Length: 260
Ligand code: B12
Image (cartoon, rainbow, N blue to C red; front, side, top):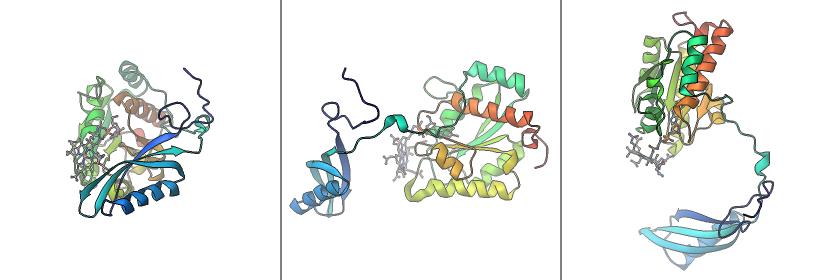
């Protein structure tokens, strides 16, 4: 295997370092030579070299889909990347239950949902339901947690009302649809109404989804954000440590039944 210079990474197409990528996009123009030329110009304006339209197809009147191969000229420094993932050491399910028994001594109450008009429930189910994700049980299966999954298309107000009723330690939200920044609106609204109820400091807020990052979550006022590849024990590790830290600081936010 040839050695990769991680300070000068380029896409791998046919061989290491050739920089070849494939683009797939639709233009709102009828298929034909002018459409193909526009697609090539688009690739050139993106800074790509030697663009080649390898496939073009009329989608419907006035719309054409393209596949373009092109060469990336720039290189990228993989070693310089700062990762903004949730900064916590992951534990196994047994370790998490043991940690919670030792440091918390009661179940951590969590309430979660996929909110707004978003119907993609698979992410929140993967985190909370017993069946979990890829053979890893969801929080429902842990002794450390009392998990309530409200499902999908849940209005933020309903989620918050349930959290108040249960005096939940954490509210967990899943968002998949990002069209027209729907996820931003839903997540922002939740933070606003939690704050308006005076519950923000006592409630851990975490969200997740394929296009959610920890950076975005924090920017929107959440404590943590999780993306693709998250397993229930990742979330659980974060939650037990967060609740334990709040208890250790004698923070009222972790003492259930105490007003904010
Ligand atoms: C299944 C699916 C559906 C199902 C959903 C069924 C269900 N009960 O969930 C159905 C058919 C209903 C559906 C509908 C639609 N869908 Co859809 N759907 C998908 C699909 C194929 C898979 C999504 C999925 O289940 N992934 C698996 C889960 C496990 O991954 P995940 O959600 O990312 O979760 C992981 C992490 O993100 C994280 N995580 C997620 N949530 C949380 C929460 C917390 C608290 C934590 C800690 C972690 C966490 O952990 C999880 C495990 O690692 C994707 C395409 C794809 N291949 O991804 C499109 C996709 C998501 N759908 C899409 C669209 C556009 C739609 C529709 C709008 C289509 C339409 N025009 O009607 C509708 C939406 C309707 C609505 N009102 O929401 C787009 C979204 C584009 C966008 N970014 O906005 C996608 C990407 C398809 C595409 N390429 O266009 N869809």
